[in-house]
Length: 400
Image (cartoon, rainbow, N blue to C red):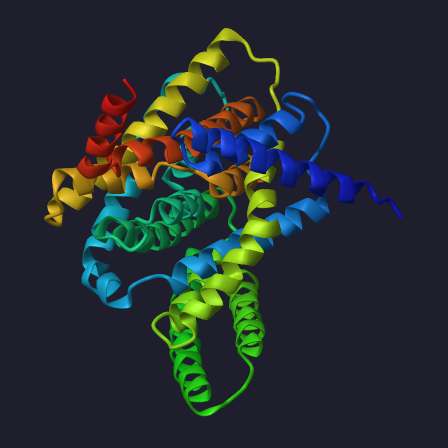
């Protein structure tokens, strides 16, 4: 048996912590340091650690725990109030990036294949993806997760995933006759029915159990985690919906119960101790710097700029239409910028069915990494309170 994985995990934990502390020192979210740790340790720099199946599995559990904790901390009443707004934000956050990505692909795609139009649209679909896990971790660190903007981001990101799946399926069904859009839509509808029934049922059973039973608190954590994993599995396996969506709804089912604070603290410990560092570092481990000609470098720069701007503009416009303030609209737009593992999964799917050229894969990976790293930095800027700025000015005056 190869025990190298033990050393790999140790290196990830130490490096993510050290670089996280460095990020905090220079007034950036610690998640930025964790992401950079993966890039430095991985093939792009030192090559000390490579992505393995075990690290990928631990990473997946890490993001599931992260989204479960986000669901636990969500204010359901606030989410209900922002439900309509979340849909509008998500809708424009899909349409604008899709059009922007397809337009960029139109100018750079020199394919002679008859599916050129579908290929261009597919690049746009990649840009519709949102990886809310990075935003969630950053907002939790800043204490802004339960703000109106934070709740709108969470709701919009969930809807964004569903709309992205529908758009992806429609394009793939045009290129692959074996994929039926009607079946996919029925599965998505079935997921919401199943999840709502499971979440509501578990919420009331759990509440009744915890109110009337003197069971040791640790047992609540174990049962809750099992429920989270089962719902995540069902989402992926039976309905084709992202497992993190199932995890979020599992957490939502327990939010507001008497033991939710206790469960949240235990999951924060599990996440902080092992799973979150591996998840964030694993994103950096996927970065490989290939040989690229000038055209591909230009495509990389343009697609990255469009990826950032279209999410900020699309989601920000949706927020303004729903009466959010200018500041909140910018916060929501920035919170939806990160593409993360979601865009990589979509890109892999497109490459497998011939909807994306191999030469575009590396630029997409670079775009994903850049949007993932800059999102926490931008969130720090747009969520900065005036009081924080005044305190910093006072401290500077004192030390001057």
